[in-house]
Amino acid sequence: MGIIKDKKIKIVQQDERSRARDPDSLVAALTDADPTARRWAARDLADFPAMASALAERLTLEPEASVREALLLSLTQIGNRVAVEGLLAGLRSDDAALRNEASEALKDLPDAVAPLMSDVLTDPDPDVRIFAVNVLESLRHPDVEQWLIQVISTDTHVNVCATAVDLLGEVGTTAAVSALQSLKARFPEEPYIHFAIDLALKRIHED
Amino acid sequence: MAQRIFVIDDAATVRLYHRQILEGAGFEVHEAINGIEALEKVLLASTPFDLYLVDVNMPKQDGYGFLRELRQLDIRQAPAIMISTEAQAIDRVKAWEAGANFYLVKPIKPDALLGYVHLLLGAGGTA
Amino acid sequence: MTDIVITEEDFRRFREFFYRKTGILFEDSKRYFVDKRLVERMIASGYASFNHYFTFMRFQASGAELQALTNIMTVNETYFFREEYHFKCLVQSILPELTQTKPPGSLIRIWSIPSSSGEEPYSIALYLTEYWSGIDHWDVELISSDIDTDIIHRARQGKYSPRAIQYVPPDLLQTHFVPTADGEYQISDDMRQAVEFTRVNLNEPTDTRSYRGFDVIFCRNLLIYFDDFSRRQAAGVFFDALNPGAFICLGHSESMSRISAMFKVRKFPEAIVYQKPEKR
Image 1: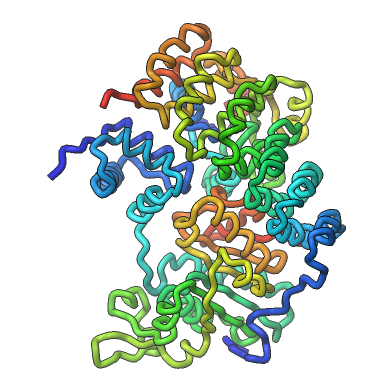
Image 2: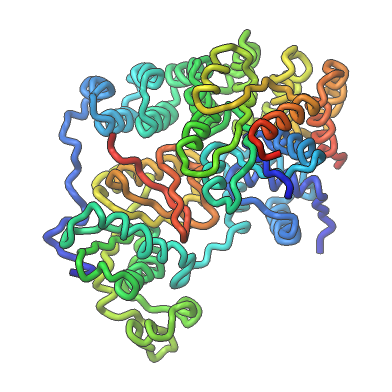
């Protein structure tokens, strides 16, 4: 017994993936009874952008956290129009976990998300708009502050505005000051909005 | 000894807002940014928390996931208020099933928050 | 030298952002430490206003400035028995739990990544040899990997400065190290034989595909230097490399709460570690 380095024991054990790795077999494996098979199929489908819709579809059904993670990473890696639309559809889900996961994945796709941002920020569902604002949080894109100013100037839903103000407290510049000040008047009875605006204004000091 | 309230929300402004209201009323406030960090802090806490304020939507682990795992832990359990932007009945039911004792819809008014906090702490017999 | 001013609100704004990204929360008492490093990065990237610098750093497409900032906000020094509570946790809690389901004589596999110049894998080997009685009843295979072949070469040589071995207890130093003519200490051949060093890039699927069947992974103070996506990918590599019910230890400044929801949080008396769920 002890610490061994027995060359007979392969450091690198055999790869258990014995199934076919062509795209159609991988898509079929997304519904395998074994979660490990599903996870590896999801992971390997990252190499096949044409299969993005199968990944997005599976994401709405998959119960296992480790498989969902692989589906999300592959969709992010593919990052084409179908993948982004699949993730945006996730924002509308009844499943809180899926909404949050989709929002996180979209944050890693600034170039693909940016052209669609205006549409999502004006979605009829306020919860989708809140998630859209959350996506802006990590979107490394030069228009983020402008989008946020647009939201707090026009959106009628208090929680959408509140989420945007929270983010402006972090990324806002003097460009946002007048919009923040006007917002107070739109929600005179909401202490949280006033608290968040005051905090944001305090942080955006004149340079 | 001040009662300990654990505020779990990914938005820094929301945590600060709750902290200010609750500390103003004499509570000790602790914070986490999502469900996983909250579980870590629950496991590390030398004294159990007296109340949880839990946001529904958070990255990595949402409020429902956190409560489901919290309720399985072998610790002194405490009431939880779920806080959401959604007002639909389905979310209330889901919050209840996950182990919440109360469900509030944002934005939160200070008086309402303190009212429910006192109510739940009183009902827990620890006030 | 500089008239750059970081206001209290600037500090708080940075602190919240950095906490959300990394899980590291700077207390008010760290204000000087943080301000000094912010000013250093602002000068290096040519900004005189915190607001302008912060906006640049937040929205820079490459994320390079955030990486540079993370590098100077975290001290990444490697030495023997660094964050020793994890090694204690390994021998006092993790291995006793794992061996409940592994018959004596069977194999326990440990992966330490990054190997860096060898301080971590050798610390594990020393701990197993000196502080775990199970070493007489179970076999252990200890594999350590790094992306950098030069550093792997140094790890294999196992020569260290007095500073790197300052926390090794004297009796272990005497048993397992030999002073060299140039004032350094070389770890014994036994220990050097105990660790298998390999080259791996965690973000290269063909590199990691065959790493399977591990019981414990140490990956400390590495993922914090990755971007969000690479970090999640690496967590996936570890998930696939671990047996169900196996454990992963992250560094003190890292938390799985910023990386992935695939693992369970486990609290042992010595440390918080993460566990791959058992198969259902």
